[in-house]
Length: 438
Length: 135
Image (cartoon, rainbow over the protein chains, first blue to last red):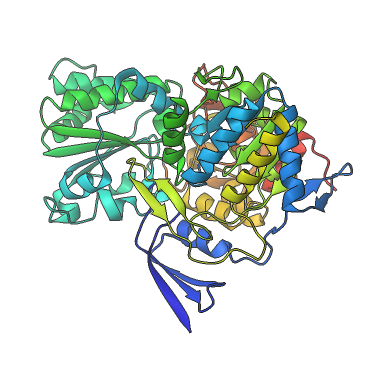
């Protein structure tokens, strides 16, 4: 006999779909089928069942080969490395739950570490812009029920958040959007004709890196002032058409992604996108929301913010929290060679940092806590496999609209395997002893 | 003789990349999904390469061998796309301009045909670039 668990949360992207159905064996040890999830979410659930998983911590030896060790030895190594280091960097946190993040922050405080989450390569610049001018935002539920103008700026949800459009933004029939897709107009701004752009009513194929100019042109167009014939590769008439479409809605939303946060103008792109939202509120109701990637990167920002006062790039080396992106941010610290111990959890900087930063990781003592084999584990000295959060253990997570949702455990982890929280607690106890902290 | 060409490189997620990272970054499927460069047909023609040819991509920040494929979300002449991953990150600009964020989108790169050079697996690529001794 099998049993089906309903209303499971998908721990892949910031959409945190909460309608997944998972079929497990009667003893709860095998996960058999996944329904309702997108192809990526399904793969995440099913990969937990793969037979080639690393199930015990392993340490790299002199000759480069791995040696299997116990969790106790792994915790000893980690605590000693953190205690010894002058400027450890504790990076990641976005694929683990808030409870583990909180214990991680306690460790960081004792070890006087720099802490950063994957916003560093994702929406870090958004956070800077939000601190500059604020964020008029809303929840995904409001969008489902009210929004009739949807703008996707520099993001491609058809690929990166596969169920976003069907659950919240384009297709669902909400309270005031009873005709679903028919009651909404969709604008996509992207230098490529992406699969999302193909669905749009208006696609503005902006010249790559010219988003700031186009956003500025929209502000001019709202006021009906003079525009050059072409701005950022888009003819003025098309900009005016998009501006009129935005103004004519009852409730609009700008979703934005890596296209604006990672291109050259960075936080200034977001500044002006927020200013566009503010301008639009003179004509109708408009909101703006970052499309967060990892399922709990938002939660990591929240936990950092309520424990240290800043959402990422936190430097505790002086015994109190400092925040200065460019100085205290992971990639800059690594590039300058300041980090003497790298602690990675719930993320893969080896694959997602520029190679110059990864080289710096490979040079120092390093611990990688991750259920998968990744480029980060490939360059780390110690690899600690853990249970999959949201599959093999529960815990609190934040959706991209800052709504906290409790993930659910649906299947038992392989025998003897620890969770992030258990392992971090072990490290914390040992570090306290080493540092003589109460 | 085919000449190298210069294009503007961007990087980002694809659904194939998402599936590949969840099914195992040590596997060949990760290379199939992310060890590629999506190029506009006009740029492939300019380079003088058939689609599915291995090419060497070089920037001021490094170089990497990937397979050139025809753009799936085009047309975008002059712009090339490598899905997010270690192949893209071997060549993207690491300048953060004091924001903490590297410039993952908008790196000028040179592309040349490298028909005899292999595209490495993800973990192997990073280990080689970092000089990690593997037993």
